[in-house]
Image (cartoon, rainbow, N blue to C red):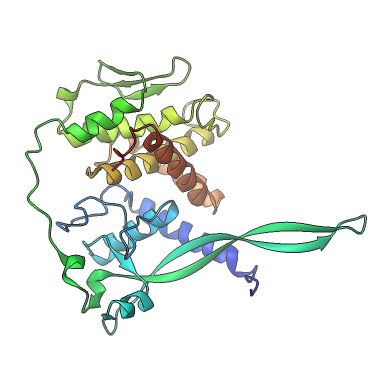
Length: 302
C-alpha cells in the first residue's frame, strides 16, 4: 500500500472548506436546496452511488454543491470505470466532481523502550465521480422520471410517523422554534402557522438534531457558554446539516429559515479558522441523523 502524501492532506481539507466558504460568502447555503429534479430516484434525495447507496457525511454537501453549480438535477453519481462497466461512457469534455474517502493507515513504530507499537494514522483520499447527466448510454432506470407530487397542503404521514417515533418531547405553541436543553424538549409553532408542511418538518428536523446532542444521547458539546459564541455557531451548523440530511432521507424540500440568516457570519468565522470543521460538522450531523433513524420501528426507515 502506498502511503498518502502528508503534504496533500491539508490541501484537500482546505479545498473542500474553501468551496463551502465561497458559497456562504455569496449568501448561499449549499445544503438548503440542492435539487430541481423530477427524477425517479428522488425529487429530494441525498446523492446516490450507482448502486443506489446514498452518500454520507461531507460527501453529501460536496455533491449537492456540485449539482447546484453545474445545474444538474439527477441525484446519481458514478466513477468513470463504473460507467464503462454499465456499457456507458462519460461524454467528451465533461469534468468530474471530487468526493472523499476517509481511511486509516497502520504503521509499526518503535516506542521509547524499544517495543514495536502499531499506530493508526487517519488520512483522506479524493476520487472523481460523474453525474448520470454527464454520461451517455446508461440503462433507462438511471434517467426515469418521478410521478407527480402529491397535494402539498396536507400533513405528510411518513414524516409525522418519523418524528413521533423518535420519542422526543415535541411541544407546540408560540411563534418560536428551539430546543430547550435543560428541560429537554423541542418547541415548535403549530403546524398551521407554517407556510407549507415541508417547512414545519424541516424545522422539526433541525430542532431534533439539537435534541440528539443531549448528554443522555450523543453528548455533543462544543463548549457553548452563551448565545452567538463560537460553540453555539458550531452546534447550529451541525443542526443545519442534520436537518438537510434528514429532509433528504424523508423526501422533503428544505427551505432556509429566515431566523438562521444571522448565523452566516458566525459560520464563516468558524470555517475560516478551522479548515477541518466542515468535515467534523458533517460527521456529527451524520451521527445525529443515524441516531434518529435508529429510533424508528424496524423496516420503517426511509
